[in-house]
Length: 460
Image 1 (cartoon, helix red, strand yellow):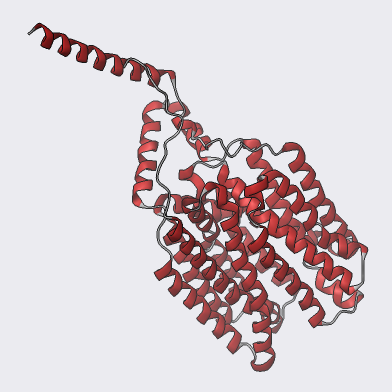
Image 2 (cartoon, rainbow, N blue to C red):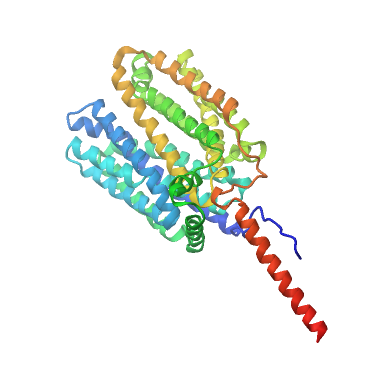
């Protein structure tokens, strides 16, 4: 009695491991189905726009519309996932995908097609933040990267299967079957998710977050309250958060910077066939899938920073291979190495975000991550459009190679992550002198009261 013990963290029971594992695997299945349905029709977008009498500029504009909508909407969608739960955002995104695929099929003009892509980009921007929030809710801290890798493996599997099946259906039957099959798989994805994906950020967690916000409102002066509240919602330390965002931006930018020129380069200059180009992309997908399933736990064991540096160095191989070689087997080997690099980077990157983010703001942070990625996929095509034919494919490959290697150097110099033994803290809950004094006063009063009662009994 009379001693004040200051609690440094609150221990809460975690999710049942078997149920958590089952939920994440089912979510990976849903992700694979969704990516398959999208991959089946993605190669047909250019043909669809070509039938409207338009060309690559319109296709690039549709990509920019999708990305711009994602940049604007993703942080707000992440906020909604934190406020109302993960499940509504996941189910809503799958429903929007099914509706958007039907819209692409029925679109009669390029303008309608672009508008549908824009709306789809905005309304599905919450899928990534909600998915990562769900994983963080139920996966143990020291296994986050592993389970994020399982989700990434589902994405890679869909990327492997979808374009091949969609291309075969189009070559034989035209637009109808691939689009109808895509819509059907999208509806199946929604159905599976509806019955298989539970809410992990339940009302009790949201109630605790609301009480925390009310408590901040009482303790923090009104004139400083908005700044403190916003700062508390961001991952800390801020330098680490900024470094992680830069990784996101550079990886997406590097790919979309070469994407418009890559098909023309391999077909016109390297004289590849369509099947050769498809084989390279497929090998990249297989490498990412296998790497996601086998290497994703590396950062849980060896730390986020060294795995990010290694993964970025390997990921640069695809751009360096295109820049330095023209032999088919050399380039395909470079893409395989790059796929393994991406399988290392993505789980470590997402896990690092979650490691430094307060629990009640996880989806918001992942929404910012998604928005920054969308910004990269918007700025790179815009820059290519402005530059036009002023740069050769080799220069574009050099720029992307340099950017990825520079990003690895930035990680080496600037990324400072808390040790895994340190808990993520919310600045609104940090100890204050006023609260310590209040606790001491209450405890002292209890001690005095107990002493008084004991003395009274003795005297009686």
